[in-house]
Image: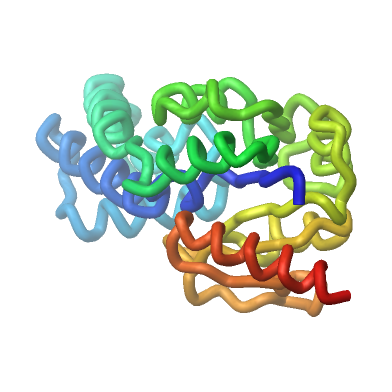
Length: 234
C-alpha cells in the first residue's frame, strides 16, 4: 500500500452531529425572531425540506416559511442563517484521532488524498477549518470534475496525482452506497468507517460492500498491517 484516501463527512469529523445541531439552533433562532411555531415541528419540517431539495440548496429557510404558509420574512430568515453558520463553525472539529492518524500515516511514508462529493469551496472550507488541508497530497472534489456526486473518475484522478495504482490504494468512507461503491469500482481497497447517520446503512449491492470495517480512524493501522500480511503470504 502506498496511498490512503479519505472522504470528509463522518470520516474526518462528525458531520451528522454538526448538521443536526445547526438545523436545530437555526429553527430555535428563527422562533426567537418571531417564527410562530414550536421547535419540534419546525425542525421536522426543515429536515423534510433538506431531504427534498438536497444539502447544497441555498433557500431552505425560505422554503420553510413557504411550507408553513407564512409570508417571507427577511429578519426571521437572517436569524436562521446566523445561527446556522455560528453552530456549523462550533461543531466543525476533527474527531480526536483524525490529526494524529493523518500525521502518523505521513510519517510512515503514505501518500494522503481526499476524494469527496460536493461543492469545491465548501469542501475546501471544511478541510481548512478542520486544520488538515496541508496534510493531503491531493484533494479531488466532485464539482471540479463537473458532477455533484461520486464517480470512478474522481478516484482515478486522485490516484494519478499521487502516482499510485488502485491495488496500492486504500479509501476510507462512512458511505457504503456512495464513496465505497465507486472506490470499489475503481479497484481500490475499501474501508468503511461506521460513524454518523450512515452507521446502520446497508450496502445496496455487492459492489457497495467494503473490504474492511472500522469504528475509529486510528484502526486503519491494523487494516494496513492485515493487507501487508495478506500480500506477503500470496
